[in-house]
Image (cartoon, rainbow, N blue to C red):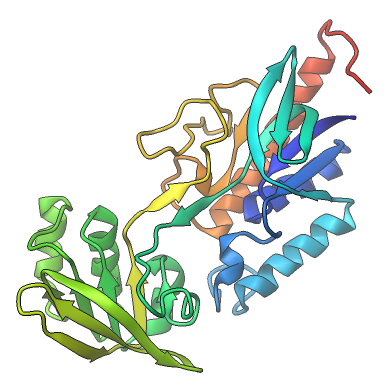
Length: 312
């Protein structure tokens, strides 16, 4: 069977692309490795998505999924191994066999890197976050911890220090890797305490979520428990793009134009897997809509050219 469009990834970008593609009457398949919803489905509370003042990430993505299924979304749960060119068409190689399509939208997102300390997985979305913009407002006038030493960690710590009553910034080295100007801004914040040469031993909490963090100093070997209501981990993210060949930045994020086109004609990228300045549900939704519209345009132009008939 030949699909018009295969969308790889069932998060906000992928589901939005599916809704737009299906409304354009494209024969569309959404491939997901695990389950529909993406990383945002793990968020405990979302308060910055327009139209929904407060709801869980899981509930928000259920709305997305219900909408997509109402317009006829087909899903296949499998792992994508690669994408090959097959004349004017694409072959999406999966763990369950090949799929033929005219165009592909990659919306596989990115995975935050984990440190692996006790409680990190248990309290993810319940006091442990990897997004200051998303979750910072929940910790207004409350003590928090920030982990990391790069540009993102320092930028987010500056932002969070404007909301939190106290920020304990934990870094395993004796200096940051971030830009000097960012370091200066962070060190000038009166409510920020830098815990140099320190590592996280455990997140502390109960049924209500995070209540503290255990930190160990590498020089003294001393461990101390600090009361915090939130823990923000910023040690980098890894895009899920290893299966596709196209232009990427040094971190592996897919380079696109404003129209979500990649360097490989007929392959589009949307959401957190691409080189975007902001990774939010709202921006992923915009990317997905654009990608679907441009995929429809690409397919229309393809069908207007003198290509051989597509295999049935």
